[in-house]
Length: 296
Image: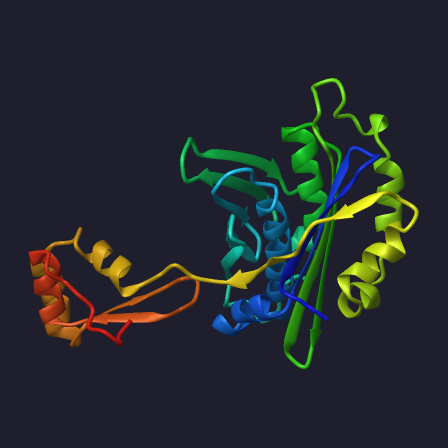
């Protein structure tokens, strides 16, 4: 049974598209990158599934970031996804708290959901909606109804067993054929949404994807496309870190090296650490910095 795959499908007679994603190794890579509390692990899994599904809606090369900002115990959480289904993410919360709120609305008080679309060619687009609903899934549905006037159904589920996580999601959306026919009343959206709501956790986490779709929609004309692989991938590198250091004063950097022995830079997404000594600093500012073969 394959996880870390995104399945796209379309209902030929209903003017509705669908997606299902199930994550395991890619989700676990984020869980292993930092010691996140359970409620944060759950939220990152939901964000990861949601980002994968929204990334699949892109009709161009680029990426999507789904970001949560709040004034509660959680201050920040983001998942970035590319058109190649390469995902990475991070969260920040008040680590002085002994226990975090379990309810989504309490965890992200006065929160906003920010969705940023960045094409490789073209203008960047950003939309925002208040996190004023009980679940992240409902907030994403509200985002689409508010920003694009498209009826949308989102299901987000996570499962933790023996410190190993799985995250799954399902997505239905009315296909925009014209400004007059995007309303769900012109489609079978309500019917398909009702069927999707019947999915059980044991089905979503344990059955093959094709069997899940057959159980839910066997009476509907569904066309399933080939699955896309989903991976955790961080684009950090020692070269990128060196580029960041090149914008700082060489004297200031050498002073830090003299005091601490080297300069350490830590990726906020995968927590890989890159170190630079005095020779590195000199070569960075001389424009001759190169990483020896076999080193990262």
